[in-house]
Length: 363
Picture 1 (tube, one colour):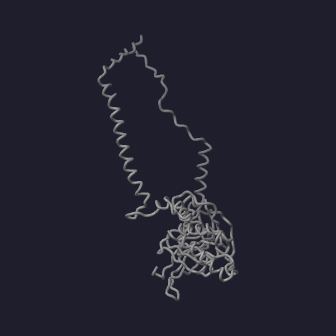
Picture 2 (cartoon, one colour; picture 1 turned 90 degrees about the horizontal axis):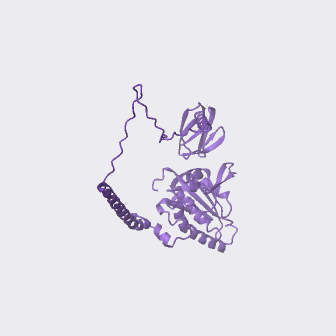
């Protein structure tokens, strides 16, 4: 974190206590204390080196330097306490810069935190909204994560900038990462929470408990296989000691009157059945898909530090999360927008099956 000259792409969780300024000073103090306790509990499993917390007076902004999942499940943990503290929440994945404030403390500035605040402003008390860039990254990590989000449409902020937002709905899925976060949300001070903790040598306690059971399971399996082999050897020895029957001799076919032998006809059916051919409709469908894929062009993107990608005026995603996309052949106008720099525009003519690479670095 000492390197304040670098621009980083981080997840930012922006939180705001609803109608905080309308409360009396004594009520504000009580709300803020409850809010700080809820937020501290939600961040217990996130190492202090992987987060920066900014106090905004009526809320907070938390920048997560590590996994994007940390921001998602910390926000879900705070949402569970919305009944006691009415909080609005927004999460964004975008570029931020580390700077030192007047007190010499580390601070965060940049479009990443600005967009997180805009997304938060669109939410209702107790609602968690995320930006399109955060959704595109997290939803690719697991199918369970994809089911957490619901598209809410486009929102326009006071600067006439549009934002695609998604709400986090439903309970936690069954993925391992989500199961860990669920124990954090429900206070995990039980045997399951103890198992999820870290034991000696940095290993999970659950792994240390499972190791002896796995060892004995392997030993037991080896003994069972050995016993089965001994049982099979007994009938084999008895079979070798028993007298073997002499096979009947089949005389060769008698020659025909003209001196030729009768050919033996094998009437037994073939042991190998013929493989069934694929239906013609299925083959045609596969061929059509291949033709459609060949008929499209492809754009590969290398944008730093980030940029919203528009094709012929339509927003297709945010790079670097968006690395490639397919478009119909023909002329197209590619716009790459970054709120802190002039828009980069390229006009290309893509042919079917052709790949066009676009590289740009915003200063």
